[in-house]
Amino acid sequence: MKILVIHGPNLNMLGTREPSVYGSITLESLNDTLIQKAKSLNVELDVFQSNSEGGLINKIQHAPQNYDALIVNPAAYTHTSIAIRDALASISIPKVEVHLSNIHAREEFRHRSVTAGVCQGQISGFGVKSYLMALYYLTELN
Ligand code: DQA
Image (cartoon, rainbow, N blue to C red; front, side, top):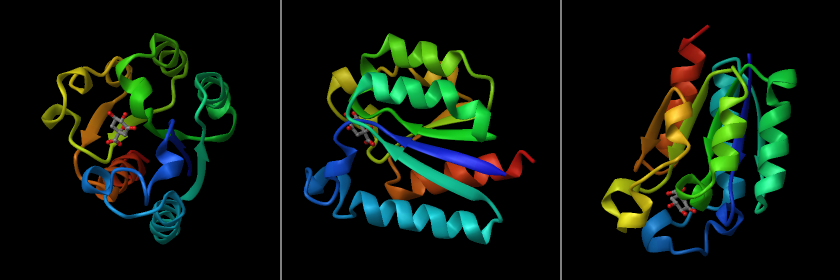
């Protein structure tokens, strides 16, 4: 099984970005954790990060050619991007939306996700474990 993890804008800044909200883990270290865990589950896992909406959409559109499932943290685009929602809706592989922070416990503008409704589900608020839970769910599907 091959899984792609997509990180949206500003997640490359993890480690120094608002540590009181996102913790001190860097994106590199988050990715390493996911890759190691995936290996132990016999899953091949690739990671991709982009700050641009178009870059994220291109990656989502092509994902079914190479991957069986998708874990996506659209970051701020979660709350605004109909284009990313449409890209996610256009592919039929299983998708899980994840967030490090609990978006429902934060500012009101973060409570709405325009993207979660076209994913199998959303996991929010568990830091790195949000991604790990998505990984466990997707590996259990096969
Ligand atoms: C985030 C939550 C979003 O509201 C925010 O814009 C992010 C990160 C999270 O993982 O908690 O960039 O997706």
